[in-house]
Length: 435
Image (cartoon, rainbow, N blue to C red):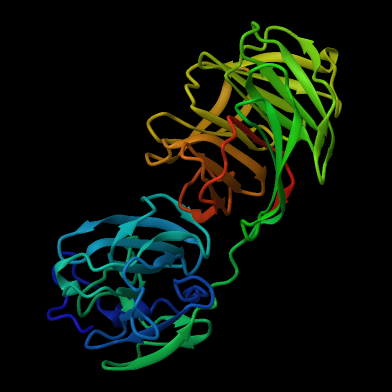
């Protein structure tokens, strides 16, 4: 939709004359290899209206679904602007290197903050109609800019700004005003995707065990839930899956009794051997195994790390008990890879930690809010996270780089099931999914 007025006064610094700038830029880096900023396969209409080379984008075939549509990064980069502008509404600008920046305005919401590193295909926000110059019409106003004056960003939103013609999937757009391109299909298909099966064990309130297999790519259950006939024989407090047929469980009313549960089969039925008592003192509210050698436990805010040396450990095979630190007041806990843990707080924060050793760890805040409704968090590796909602649904997420300490490449992938997950404890076998 053509805006009634062009954005004005977005920046106050005058542009350096184009000739003087580009006369010395013969060795400038090429523009980034952009794809359309929408998920793979979607089709969008592009219009320059009266503000070429900027383009407005609405969803084909009839614009239905434009408002609230997922916006993804067209190339890797670092967010250098993310705020609500008076005329433009919610806006984001990404620095792609080489002096090139992409700018997105009128967004319904922003999913990234300044400093976030994003990969191609990572969700950065949602399309909307915020800001006066949207004229109340949902669309994405998109600009590719070149920092011609060297001030570390690209001016945008008004005639004479540093915007240049964008190229998506090798095709250049925005050559002149009042041009329209119909059914432009997104080829933004190169984002990493998970592969493998998530093996999820659980404990029902009556003490029976469950097993469910989930295809990590589609998020669909491929097996189960298979439920055991036998019960644990005690009330469990925390659990961690070591491998496909070995689980560690602590007893709630025992001063920290730790048991090993050996699963014989989880195919047509779930059968396990009577729990093997290992020892006392494991008073952890939360447990997680990282898939390599380390078991993590949290008790009263103190994080401890143990080393496990065999697939089916006895007490002598669980060593260490190293105190990593205090202040780990987490509501949920899982491990995302060797010496990486992930958890949520009662206030809804999503936190990732890189563990180096006693007193040595680094904390990353991936989300500030909204994760408070999950009472279990589990990860089979590969950047795949599952959150168990207290109303018995299971939600899935994908972090394209789970070790970058950034939340900009973490996207919601919908639900595995909207109901039916009534387990009191859940744990995924680690390191079964890659991306």
